[in-house]
Length: 136
Image 1 (spheres, rainbow, N blue to C red):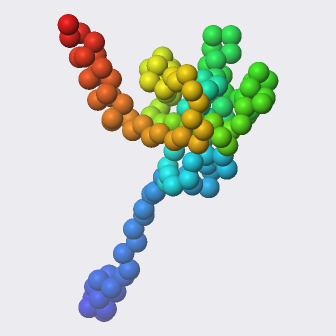
Image 2 (tube, rainbow, N blue to C red; image 1 turned 30 degrees about the vertical axis):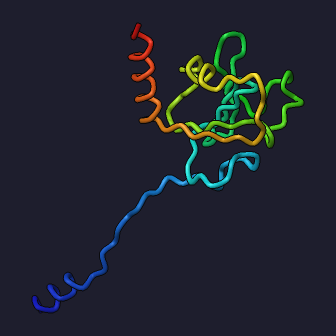
Image 3 (tube, rainbow, N blue to C red; image 1 turned 180 degrees about the vertical axis):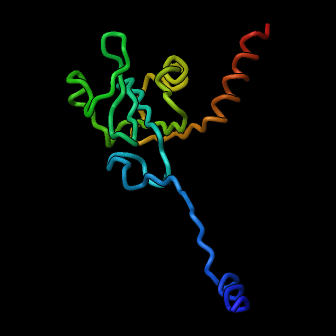
């Protein structure tokens, strides 16, 4: 009897749990293709962000960052399919809006341009920028 119980314990299938964070299905149809995970899109022409998990735009309204299902009325004619999108995978990038605004400001609009910013890269760039600012 003990031999049967130990043999059963040896041959029981091993169960593993894998947790992948893939949000392909929740990305908007106007978003760039080829990303398996995106937290935010920065839309520099309208100085707004799009938070993919909640499908909400984040923008300044009366000096406060608000989350809304659509862009404000002043951007009614903005074409999300053709506007620039910067992929940002870091929490609440709008709290560092001046950094993104200055890094992605352009006088001429390039449609369908996509850039990707990794949180680790952004931190490293920020440190390098601080160092270069203090050099004379």
